[in-house]
Length: 213
Image 1: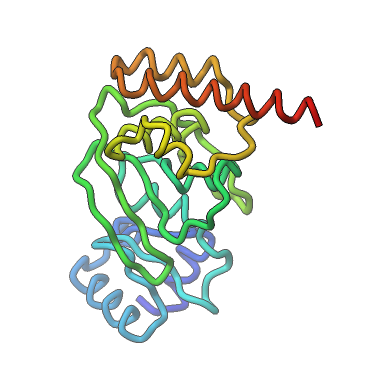
Image 2: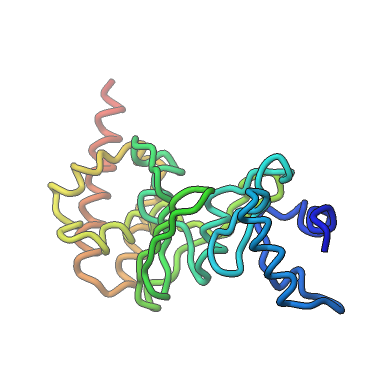
């Protein structure tokens, strides 16, 4: 396969898997050798085994980190600080895209950024939706309420007033208090139920302060 043929096949894809190139009468070993050569030449990025992206200037669009995260370790959804920053609920710029997964936890450093995966039990693997990221890209991302609860659940003492203050939560009007309490109640985890009540109280205090201005 010539490189121009590869670009013709995957040029519209933000990322692609080896399997996309193995349709028809091809030699899988030859395809993999060519991919290895293109990676060494800097024409293709290898993100993990079997997952690749075209390098500039050959790619047409830059892959969004959330889409890459979904493809790095399925099943997973973007959550925790990454989703909270996306929704404007925390002020920090988050350098690592963090996701929740039912698979093993892990971390990858790639040419497209760093990606971390935190393990959740299967009964907590809920509360996410498909988000349009623009330029034809989509990814599964936790709702604002579930992203916050995922973070609280996975952090030691995440339900304490001190930790919640440390988060420097902002724009709390973007949280749906009923959804937050509902997720916490359905989880069956007292830690999340305590935290949800505290966040709802913080939201109400922020609202009252704003109304007095």
